[in-house]
Length: 91
Image (cartoon, rainbow, N blue to C red; front, side, top):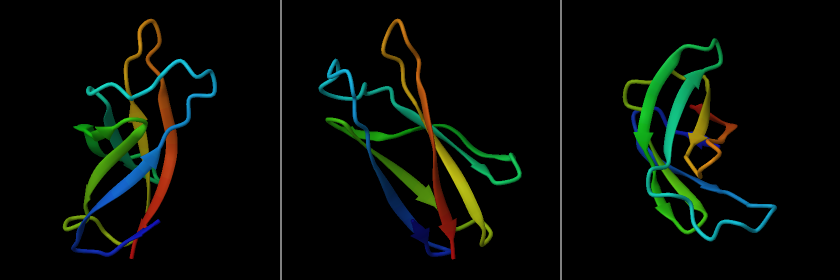
């Protein structure tokens, strides 16, 4: 996915539960963003959730033009999965 530099856009991530245990992601779903060098850019930002879809608001107004990785995190006791990386590029 490409995001224009200086914009604020939503990255939509559809999550598939292969065990069919979940009907919706928890409301406490968060995400982190790292650059490709491993530097943390965003920490524990709350995603908007609609069923099994996470909508992550990416504020590219202060990001330089390069590649980034987004990781979804949520708690579904007894597990706390971290999904990703979901890559995007600021252009």
